[in-house]
Image (cartoon, rainbow, N blue to C red; front, side, top):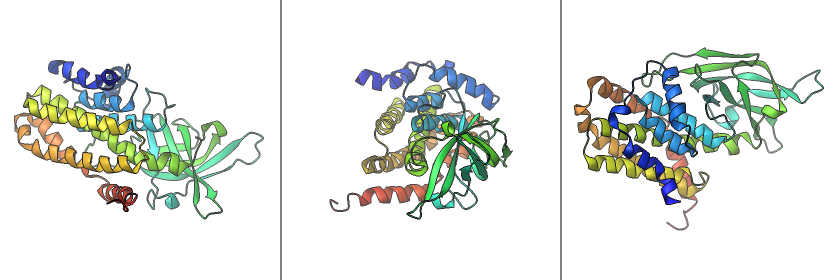
Length: 318
């Protein structure tokens, strides 16, 4: 069991640096290699680590972590498919802000629904083949928004994608607006369970874990390629093992959130400590890292709020 769990570490250590530094001209070029590299892996967190390791830039490492997090969230998703998670709307991503609406389709003898709405800031909007869309079935008796998650193909009639302006970092990853106009949805395309508790809420933690794993994988490849000190590689690997331990645990547990808080703090400290070593890295790669490492600071406020909530479960014991 231990050998299986640490197999990804052996894989990273055994890889020859000169064969892991391929450069990709496009997202499509990277995607083909990523699918090949993860073909024998089962755990999504291992996919994230491997994806980061074989990425030539932070953007593609992030894409690997994002893809792996969705694989963990919805295991039935096809492995070799880019999927976008569509939650945020004009007033944000809180459950009560979701106004995209699922309503019974009129004049239909089948179990079909009509989906109308608009999603924004959708990651990988230009590249995605499938979209996981959070939508409301109306308010429940408890006054809460009844949310469901719908799986849509890019070719669905009534679904259009509007690509947004590039972000100041990871510009290779697109973001966009998804317009949903009378999209017909069959019952079979509505995922089981509550849209918020089963999908939206856990994804925030899963994304943190799997993107962290991918970034660490990327850093270990850089460490090997540019001959950083061995103890630096050891530190990176130890954080990968810690990330994997949490990623294969029950992400709903408050204890996992608390440990994740410490893990992300350690990763940030490691990134800070690595700063002098980037002077020995090719200027283009170093410059891109300086620009794109800002990715790790996104959603800090929301992350801190979740950590405080996790600690509140143990307030009687601390």
